[in-house]
Length: 82
Image (cartoon, rainbow, N blue to C red; front, side):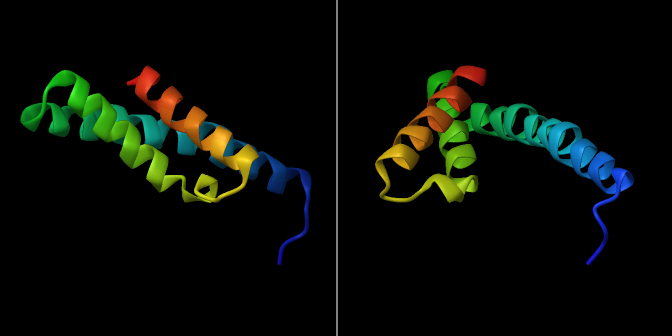
């Protein structure tokens, strides 16, 4: 366990708010969408990549009404971004 020093918070901010979103965008939008586009129509590739993104964020896959609404928004925003 490490102390919650300012350097710890900088590390968490950079990794959580900069590094992870960039890697996700590169993987889901560049690589995965391009590969799905080779085998499916444009709309099918978008929906399939959005579904994989949605499932990869499995913390939203619960039977709670608020989380279900959040889950629908995750899927819709992933499809919109693609």
